[in-house]
Every structure is written in C-alpha cells, then in structure tokens.
Length: 458
Figure 1: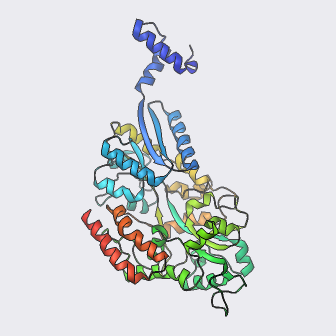
Figure 2: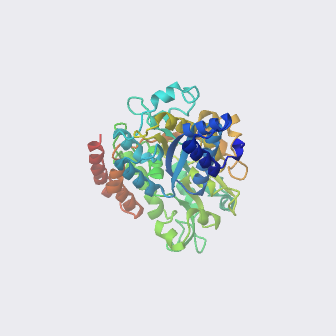
C-alpha cells in the first residue's frame, strides 16, 4: 500500500490489525506509523475575520509541509473581544491553548501573572530571529521585552494610523494632499485651515463664511476616531505621553490635554469633523463616506488599507501622514504571538511561534494591505518589492514603511491593569470627549482613578 494512498480508514485497519494479531506491515508502512505517532499536536488560539482565518490556515499548511513533527490545531474566534474573554477563562481553567494571539492590552498583565512562557533564551539561540537587526528596533524591544530584557512574546506585525484621502476632493479644492516626507506633513494650524476649505454645507459655504450652516453639512473634511490609538498619536505629536515612562496614564499632562481638546475642537469648534452620531444617522462608515464624496479624509489604521485601497474604491484615493502639533507621531501596535506557560510542549510551541515570525507568514498579510512589517528585511527596498502590491498600496506607501514609521512611530507598551483602567475610567473619558465635554472637566479625575488601578497592578 503506497504511503500516499494510506487513507485514515486504511491507517486504522493497519493499527487494529497490528494490535490484535501482530500482523506484518512493511518497513515503509512502519516508518509512516512511527512518524504519525511521533508527531506532536499543539493548539493555536486567535481571532480575526476571513483574511486572518485564511492566512493562519495557509501558514499551518506551509509549516506542516516543511516538517512532520508538529501538527497545529487552529482554534479560531471571529471577534477579538470575545476571544480575550475565552482565553482568560481557559487560562483560569487550565485549558489554555499551547500558543495564542495575545491582544496588546492583555500582554503585560498576562506576562506579569505568569501566564506567558519566557522565550528569551529561544530567541537568543535562534540563528535568524536572534540577529540584532532582525526586527525593526528599538520599537520591537520596546513592546516585547520587560524591564529586565526578557521576552514573553513576539509582536505579530506593526499597524499604525495615517490619513486616507479622496484625491478628487483635493483636486476640486486645488489643495495638495499630505504625504509621508517630513516636508509633506502638515502643521496643525495649517491642517485646521485646510479642513475648513474641505468642509461644505448644503449651500457650498465653509466654516467661517457668513451664513455657514453647521447643522446641514454635506461634506466634512476629516473623521478622527476617539479611541486610544488615534488619540495617543495626537498626544505624542504634542509632546505628551499616552503611557508615561513609569507605566502610568499621562493623559492629564498639559500637553496631552491640549492635544485631546484640539481633537474635540475639530467637531465642536471648527465644524470640520462629524460627530459619531452623524455617521450613525447616515448609516455610513468612513470608507463609504470617502467613496461617496461626503468625507475628504479619514484617520484610520493601516489595516484599513485591505478594504480602503485604490483597487476597491470608486474615487481616486491616497494616503498621507497625520498632521503634527509639535512633532510627527503615530502609534505603532499589534497583537503578540505567545507560548502559554501551561503548554506541555514548550519546544514545539516555540517552533510554531518562531515560524510566525518568519517572512512567509507576515508577507501574505502585507500583500493585502492588512499589516506593516516588523522585520527589518521586509522594510528594505528589496524586501518591499516582495509585497508592495499594485492596486492595493498607494505609490507613496513605501515611504510610509521605510522612512516615516522608523523615524516617527511610537511603540506604546500598555501596563498591567490597563484593561481595567481603560474600561472603568479612560473609556468613559474618551466617550465624554467625543460628546463635546471639556477635557479639563473630565480627564484629570479619570486619569487619577485609572492610575490608582495601574499602581495597584505593579
């Protein structure tokens, strides 16, 4: 019986016959059985939509084709928030997977609580991943290594916020859109003035014009979401810190509060950005708003390029850097790949996590616009040529990856206790900001309460 014709049914027949009667099997069949019995099964938990699900399955197929000692079971949950709850429940019950996606705001908490395996020695001994310049630095160490330089996971990739814009609306207004080169990044005051030119009411008037109707805006300039990553980008651009060097929230500093108020003012003072309720009432997301000429610019994560790219949009679109207040800045973040401390197969689990940090896995997501590289070689001219895709990546996207991100990207490490601090205190403050409440009336108290949680989790 040829090995490649050995079906599951025939395999069971052989196993049953061998056990019952000691039946003779050929050396080749014996080798197959030995290999099958020797393979170690490990589990891999994570979340994601269709693209992530298919990408992980492709990676497993590739990994298993390269070797025959490790089999990977993919435990997929579509929603990231739901998966986080499932994972914590399984960790508590002792039924956690061997390896897992770990969301950035859970990483430090799980590391501190001993739920994640220390993989530092594996990395240092690895001839590829152990190279000093294998990952983009210092950002990778900033997020993955603890205060003692120990790694308990590896960032899956990088993602970061930038501007997506409708080129047709810029052409109509005779305005040059932003780029990623330092001299193409708008100063904040200039950004606000441009936003006024790109905002129109039903009669074509702009904010500041006599008779401008703020209750009947037909074209907004910008949508800047009010959640932690795009908010943190503005804070760092104004010289503040989202998380301070001592691991606390820095959103009550003068620099941070000024930046946050400026974002609120885009909506409630300058009338150039829609309230979230306006988008809800229209029944449109930022992609649809841009594509229907209702929105000139959307601030969104780099992952949005997988559905908001030139090949899928009806209008000509492009990308550019966030405007700067005192300095250019964007927040770099992503989930981690980790070995769970309770794994009974740490060596095999490490081999899988290692594979996820090699070019094959990352490249498939880079090509569709979902991710940015965290590996140095993929950000070089030669590396960019392996994944930059016509119709997906705008012409200047190479510069975003190879120039802007290394110079201006900030890797934010979220401290232990952050989930509780955000859910109980910071998120309500973000919601209040989106609803037009003054920053000085909300954030000092919210940050004080959040920091009490963070200090208790040290």
